[in-house]
Structures are given as C-alpha cells and as structure tokens.
Length: 431
Image 1 (tube, one colour):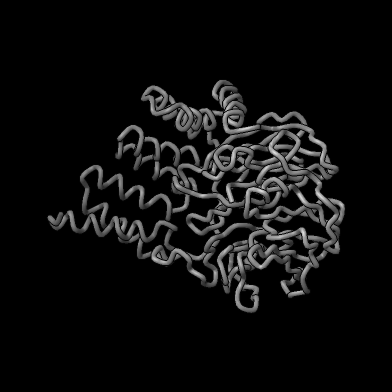
Image 2: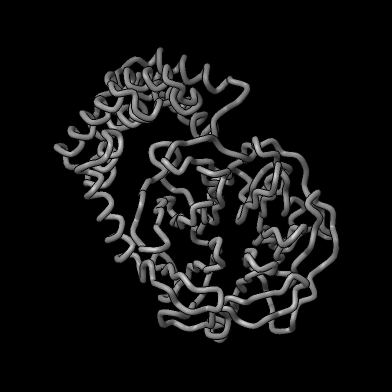
C-alpha cells in the first residue's frame, strides 16, 4: 500500500503519502488546512502503508519499512510508536508484537487491531491495548494469508484475507464468528471500510490489467451481499483505477485514493457521493497536490506561528543557508514564546546539527528539548553524535553506550550499536 486516508470527527480528510507527509483537507472546499512531515522525529525512509485516526486529534501511521505503528498528533507532535523492536536480520519476522509487513490498523473501543500482511503468518492479526501494549494474536488454521484490511461492521470486526480470497468475521472481543459469504465476482479483498449505512465498502487487489479496468469500489450489505459497484472503474475523473484506500465521511460521502497513472507517487484523491457521483477531485496527481501544499506553506510562512514558519524554512525552502539561518531564528523565537513544548528545541537541534554544522549549538538545543519533555531515546544519541563531531570521543562513547544499555532502547537501537562499534574502532586506531 502507498499511504492512506483518515477522516476525523469534523469530516476533515487527512491524506498521508507513502513517504510520510500529511496534508489535511477541507472536504467542502478542497483547500489544504495543514501540512506536516515526520522529520526529524523518524527515519527518512519510512513507507506508510495505512493510517487511522488516533482519538480525536491524532493519527496512527503504519510504517511497513520499519515495522511500527507511529503516533502523531494532527499538529505534527510525535506521540510514540507501537510494536516490539524487530530484528533487522529477519525481514519477515513472524513474532508476537513485531509488526512485520504491517498494512492496516483499526482502533476499536479500548483496543487496536493490527493487520500484518505476511504469507502464512501466525501473527497476521494482532491486538494491542490503546496505550500500545501487545495483548495477543488472533490465530488462523495454517496461518494468515495476507490479511490486509480491517473494518468494524456493526458489532463485528471484518478482516480481508487477500490471498485466501476471504473476509473473516470476529466479535469485538476477537473471537472468530465465521466468514462473509462473498459473491463470485468478489476476489482478493484488500481494503474495507464501513459505509455509514450499515454495510461496507470494499477494494479488491487486481492481478491483471483487466482487473484494473473492472474493479472499482464495491458495496457490501451488512450480511456481505454484493450490492454492486458504488464507484465504477476507469481512468477518467469520477472513476477509479487501481484504488488502494477508501474512507467515508459522516454523511456517507466517499473519499478514494487511486493510481490513474499506474503507480505512486502519481496518486489521485477524489470525493464521491454515497451513490458514486463525483463531488470533486481534490488533486489529480502529485503536481496538483504540491500546488495545494504550496499555497498553505506560503500563507503559513507569512502569517503562521514561529514554529510553523521555522519548519517551512527548514524543510520546504531547500538548503539555502539564508533560509536555514532564518529557520534557526524562528525556532529560537518559538522557544522563547513557549510554543509547542519541546518541538522548537528539537527542530533547532536537528537544524544546527545537520544543516548548519554547529554541534555545540545543537547539543545546547537538544538539552533544552530534553528539559521540555522530549524522549531521551531520541535525543541522547543525537547529543552523542554532536560530541563526536566536536572531537569529544570519550564523551560521545560514554553517552551512547549508556543509552544503549537502557532497558527501553529506541527504535534505532541496532543502527546505534553499529555506530558505537565504529567509534570504538576509530578510537582504537582501526580503519
């Protein structure tokens, strides 16, 4: 999957691109309301496969590249991650709590149901508490065959098991309740969402070019009966070609992400009525999406709070030194004004460390971020890098080694372990 959609209680549409950028849209006007990226809080090479609302003001992002659920506020504030530390030597690690090939997440009352799309995976459907603690895996005889879509339909959880060509039904407690009896035309179900009228909308995984031209957005009744195509297949506006995520608004309107040009990054976002009539194309391709983002960024760069303006200059204005210096000044202004907790100090530290090559200043900024509540697992290794860059080898090694011996290591534990080994070798005079 290539990113996803989430709809909040105010019917704002949140589009998450595969590389992790988030754009929030007004469903009535199509205007971009907010833009944020995940930097500098996560690795640069995330692969977001799905998303869901995390309460009223947050997002759950399924990062299949690093095998975590990532939690972010809608204002861009990181709120932690879910999933046990995976072993980088096992690319398909089928273990309790490890989210290998994570491809969907469903918040349901006090639990999170998480789909992992591995072939014959024992832990293909896992249950976590809302605070992120692993509770259990839901078994399937012989293992799951790529469960890739989850939805709450009535008082049941439906799980789309793509390679088995089936939709499994479960109680809200996670007990198996049978299968949905599917129409012969419904093959390889991949994405599910409730349709606000008691039934479900379903996307199918195409195997051939003919499937792309036949599969739109299917509508299922509450008992699984196929009620036809809510949105028909096709490449033109008002149709969908290779749809890969679908979400519904409170009035039943349907938002769909599809691939009219064959694959990402050229994705399209359209809004339809419940009957499938086109309301608007929010963006037809990547260039239109960027234009909408640029409008928001330009307005924010002029009139936004200092922290938001700093991020525009830091991440959206290239690496021009003048913009980076302006971003640093704005981060400091935001820190002085008490904006957004630790975020300005953390951003300033990242900017000084990687953009302006000022390791001493970066360490001071990171210290301020720690004092304001930033996660030490993210900050202390960065401080160690600053010390190493400032030729304080002993201080860098001692700090990083102490952090790695912590009982709760950060997600970059193995990479930091290699970094520590490199430092030890270099200190010893080895190549």
